Length: 177
Image 1 (tube, rainbow, N blue to C red):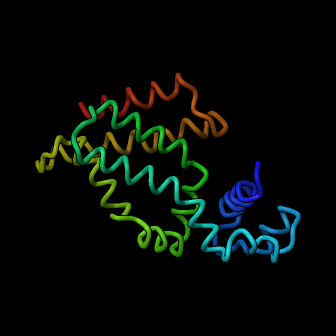
Image 2: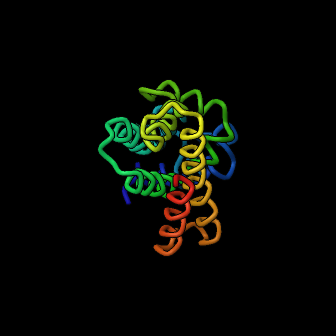
C-alpha cells in the first residue's frame, strides 16, 4: 500500500472512531509513524485528507442518483446498487452522520445535496409518481435497503454475506410491492 493510501486508511479509521473534529493531523501522522510535516507533503490539510476520503464515495453516490434519474435501472437493480453502495461506504457513515462540518463539506462538493440524491432514488423507486402512497412505499423500500444493510453488516461483523444481501434486497422489494 502506498503512503497516500495508508494515510487515507488511517484517517478513515480515526475519523470513524474519534470523529473528524476529534482527529488532528498529528494523530494521523502518529498512527502512520511519521511527523506531521511528512504528512503535509502528501496532503496540505485535514480537510484535504477528508476530501480524498470522500471523493470516490461522493462520485459513486452522484452516479447512482444520476442513474436513478435516467430511469434505466429496474427497482431490483437500483436497490441492489444502493445496498452495494451502503456496504462500500459503511465506515464513512458514522463520520458523515455525526459531524456537521463533514456534512457541510459534502454539500459544498456535491452537485446535489445528499437529500436530493436520496430523493432521486426514491422518486425512481416510485416510478416518478407524486402520489403520496407510492412515495411512502418507495421511501419504505429505500429505508429497508439502507437500514437492512446496516443491520446485516452489524450481524456480519462488517461484512455482508451473499445470503444477507439477498435477504435485504428481497425485503426492500417486498416493501416496494
